[in-house]
Amino acid sequence: MASTTSIIWLAAGAGLLSAVSASAVPPAAWVALTLMLHGSRGLDGATGIAIVFAVSYVSIAIGSRGILPLPAPGYFALAAAITVTFALPFAIDRLVAHRLGPLGATLVFPLALVASEFLRSRFTPAATWLSIAYSQYGFLPLMQIASLVGIWGITFVVAWSASTFEWAWRYDFAWAVVRTPVLACAAVVGVIVFGGSARLLFASTEQPSLRVATLNRPVDLFVPGEMTRITEGRVSPDERPRVAEKISRLHDWFLDGSRREARAGARLVAWPEANLIVFADDEAAFLERARRVAADEHIYLAIGLATIHVGTPLPFENKAVVIDPNGAVLVNYLKTHPVSGWEAGIMRRGDGRLPVVATDAGRLATAICFDADFPEFIRQAGQRFADLLILPANEWRTIKYLHQQMAAFRAIENGVPIVRPAASGISSAIDPWGRVLGVSDFFSPGDRTLTAQVPIGGFRTLYARTGDLFAWLCVAGLVAALTRIG
Image (spheres, helix red, strand yellow):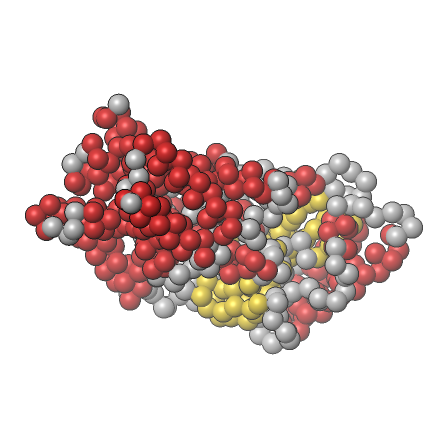
């Protein structure tokens, strides 16, 4: 009976986590982890661990179906690999926690979850996707801890709170037994939330601002799949004139739209990732036109550029080009992190250096889409004192909210505002505290242009200086706990 009840608690928590995996509902993660821990800790032996893995696999396979862009069976194999990293902390908790004192017992699970998420982000192509930390989007006071220790501090707080509450629940909330871990956890969480609230309350509002506009491609110019085929370089000589005519119309669309927004007051106009397609031998001529627009309208122009090398093994250059109001090209950045699968198979990679350039408007940094899912990469913006990060993106409907929300954590970590023009997603402007200044949904009817007044100026953060030190300390703490009971 106890095992059946434990399985029910485990499944209830996993089901809740699966239901909110593609959207941020902050309380859901706290409740879900508590229920899963209660179920896991009530199961015995190797069979119990196997049940934890099985239930976790079903939860991840269902909840991530639209998030991970792979066909079966590759999708289910990837879900299994992610399950290992998610379920392992529960297994470690079951094996270790009961051998330690009350406070130590509550710390094993958060140490293990942070270590698992962090090592997965560093040593697998998954980056920080599916981190529990992202479930706390919208809980701004808690999100501020990312400025100190990155998202790993958020994962730790949520997991420690769940572990502590479950410990108290297991002992029927007997105060004499649970007092020490409960008071310790409550004090730390209270200080973090209070400190985060104070950080938001006293956030500076005096820095200069820049009027920004983001554009998006026309929805009816290309038929479904056509842009993908062009990006892959699959254009025959017979097709070339017809495709070139469409691409020419696309160029006019973006350049004319940039002039329009400049004359409406924008000083920076940004285009989404790979939305401006150009054949390699036409790139110089197009950039000359773009430079002329920037100079004529006296604006900064940030272009998400797909340069296509037809007939080569790696036909796709995924670029971000930034042009200043004098018509000079400041940045010609090649994306560093391709998404595994289709993009990785056709894309030429960058050198891993995130550009930061000094301008009259401040120090501008640039990265592209999936790059931003690697905090250690984006930390270059904070280390080099960027005042604005321009982040062109291109995604798909299922992840449009989740991926836009993930970018807010990079803003907090590095104390830098972000402008994120997104194709097939949510374009947004975000301030250094993770607050959204404006959004535009590609899938909404009507004009998909975003305009926002964005504060320019970075704020130095501890995370930008020390990076993932806290996560490595969690790894060390977990190793110490395992060694102690070994």
